[in-house]
Image (tube, rainbow, N blue to C red; front, top):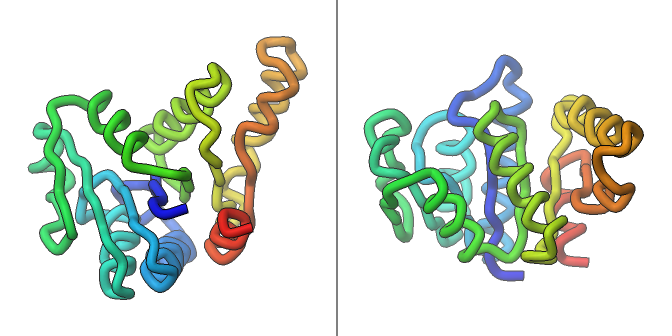
Amino acid sequence: MRSICIFCAASDGADPAYAEAAADMGRRIGEAGLRLIYGGGSVGLMGIVARAAKAAGGEVIGVIPTFLRYVEAPECDVTEMHVVETMHARKQMMFDFSDAFISLPGGIGTMDETIEMMTWSQLERHTKPILLVDTRGYWSAFDALMQKIVGEGFARPNLMGLYKIVPDPESALSVLQA
């Protein structure tokens, strides 16, 4: 395990616990000598996790689409910044660079990225771990929805094994290192 992709919000969220968890996640990635792959922005949880990883000595690789450069303001203090044309190219490059995926709280972009990695796993395009950091129970409703999808017959029970919910950043790295 060398590179971890973080999916998270381009905003701070309503509760300071989200920013604290993002900073903790970034710091732990940096201290572990791992490479952070992320969406390239300097705003919200994205910027927090990147700055914390870099400050802790980590290698930070950003991937941002051209049209978001002026919205998410690319983080300038990163090891590498890749500018791509589309959101699809962003997700593909982040996937290609990563050994595992960790989703922190976020909006529909975070959901999209997380679900796409789950879909690719379900379609046997990869076997990379997908972890959801459940800060303040954020992923509980998502987990309930996935259970409903299985219960209603729209997915097989193995859907529930495509991701793992963990309580905090420390647990996420412990799971990956085990």
